[in-house]
Image (cartoon, rainbow, N blue to C red):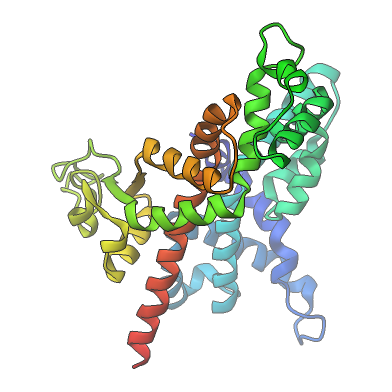
Length: 348
């Protein structure tokens, strides 16, 4: 169970949250009732309302209509605001857990008291505030692969730049520094550098995107395939939720396979909605060898000479960089077009 979930199930933490968030729910100074008079009642209302909103974020209308004795003196707008706060709080659980772990380790090693900082972390809903607290504990950024190679082998970067600029042509003395065994420049680093340049070539990107649009297949699978319709809930009743790998709503898309450009707009939007709800998971099917040949063909048309490094670099450029970049872009563009056409239909 996550650390933040444990916190939210502890009564003292509800009190901490209500005290920390109280200032955002106090009336303006111009109000007739003094702020000091309302502090205890607002704090108490927040503390009682938080567990109910945590259990069911959609219960705001019910609470405002039928549980007025609980939320009073909070307004409907403030209850909505409180629901937003608890959702923000949950969204930062991973970062909060990291910070609390580091604070606990620091206390055990240096014997310091970080109770005030710990309370701030446990109640904050500001990502920037938590990141500022986490900054001293955050591991240093190692940089990209190219940055690290540039630091370790600066001359190798110049050699690969020369190779790319001269379209695969390199004199023997420079080539031997990379290709011969036992040289100071490892071949895998040279392949990485050359792959970065291939993946950044506009002609290569355009050709890959064009063919990706024609050839990309989408594979959709349901999540939690072990759950069945015979699962029982808390009251012993059968749950109507997930069945055969996903909600019944998305049952038609479980083990679904089709070309991406064959999908209808409503199918794209339904699959995206299922992924957002973590009911579905999508993967993209592409023939790796075919796309490596496409890249090779583009470079040949640009009159590149296929230096021995190119074979491995093309494979690395496709598998490490271009494949994910192109499929992500293609899926986003498909979703955007489907969304725009859906809006147009409703506006007609």
